[in-house]
Amino acid sequence: MSEWAGWKSFEFGASGWSGRGWDGGRGGFCSNPYALDRTPGGSSSGSGAGASANLAVAAIGSETDGSIVGPSSRNCLVGIKPTIGLHSRGGVIPIAHSQDSTGPMARTVRDAAIMLGTMVGVDPRDPLTAASAGNFLTDYTGALDPGGLSGARVGVLREYAGFDSRVDALFEEALDVMRAEGATVVDPVTLPEELRFGNEYEMEVLYHEFKADLNAYLASLGPGAPIKSLAELIEYNEANHDLELALYGQELHVRSQERGPLTDQRYIDALAASHRLSRDEGIDRAMDEHRLDALVGITAGIPALQDPLDASGGGGGGCSTPPAMAAYPNMSVPMGFISGLPVGMSLCGRAWSEATLIRLAYAFEQATNHRRPPTFQASVQV
Image 1: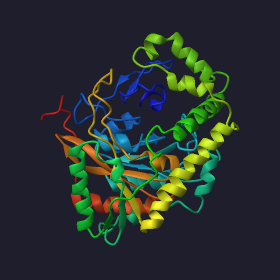
Image 2: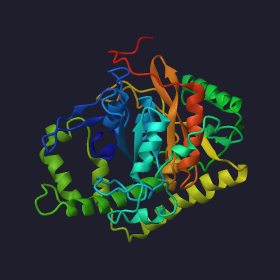
Image 3: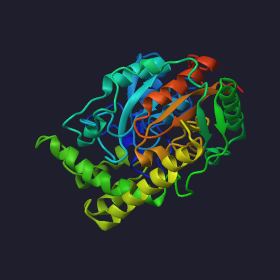
């Protein structure tokens, strides 16, 4: 997994890297099984690469913004980031309780749907799961309808495309498939301009919640834990520079440590703005206005080269931020390949709409059959 889910440095562009750390772990880089010199995405890098490479039938990823759907796209998997509260985060190292989620990553929609149903339920270790009572299913396979796109209305997040003409071409083909399968495609559907990755509202929420949530998690480990607070973590990284800071800094840790408690008005205002923009003025408004079943967009760009200096860039694109900020579900399904490298399509919607997204994704999957196993080639053959 990308160390601290990538919440460590602004320069942390090489997904799948981790230092050896205090636990003596393996560390280093995780590779993409479709081309071993490419990134598998992150932060759930190992979950993506492992399930794709047939090392497991399926895997569990964790996401704050893009960390399930992103590696699912780059490893030709189906990934489901559910509504916050559908799955417990008990035992999961946190970034932010208002956006963190666990979710299945699997090679087919059926496998992901089966796994989703086994993970639901109210858990006293995670207070937000109380809201899921009456909103979850223990079996989502009833949504696996090959004709599920017929009569559906989907809105195109056109503003989140346009970063790569090759990826755009695949997206247009995907939209044509949806139309051919009987869906009405509303193109475009707009969301507030402020809903972009790393916007000021999301970042402020994450700064505050990372400090509060990580300190609470570390405290729960008891007096024997080697690291007991974010402040101690920062000190550890500084004392072990060659292991932890040789490639990337820890600016995100430091900025989080500088924030105050969750009672600060700065945090309260940022969270309120985040929910207003992503829910009331964002996803809910768009879906009401156009009578939509889901929004559709490009999950991520072409997997980038595995470059410790991140000179190749991060692959670009992605529409994970609006549903991440809203705490709403998002799902990625394979959309095709570019020079042997996989690219995914996202479906997102209202809270607790997982069954609807699965129905649409399954129909798309059955109509296209894009999934094919990796070949573990050393590099892309253009």
